[in-house]
Image 1 (cartoon, rainbow, N blue to C red):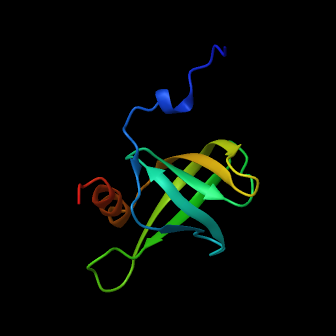
Image 2 (cartoon, one colour):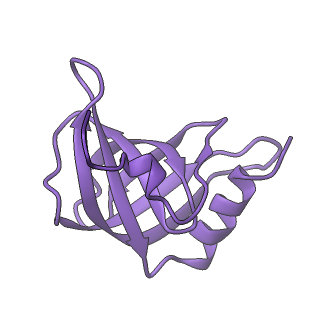
Image 3 (cartoon, rainbow, N blue to C red):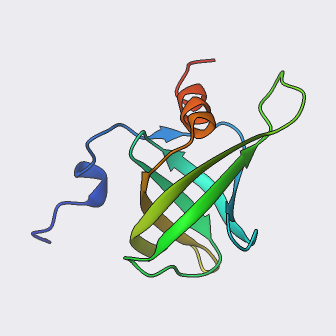
Length: 116
């Protein structure tokens, strides 16, 4: 048995699993990175096709198309990769700590945690 506490048990804020697709892009290059898996007010988990190294700093754009709203929403933040693990043969789960979060992304995250 490992003496380390799993990352999920070290969280300071609850994570919300999404009920809709949220695409994640690199803000600078506009390159598609993957999909948002879950989120909290302090962090996000992204599924990516490529491994991202812990310590990497990213500027992210998150784009969703919420139900009952015409158009899409785009929120931005800075993120630091904290961990990256292979979750399927072709996908990595990447946990990031977020900061400098835009008002729109804050609103998006809050909308994900509301019951339907």
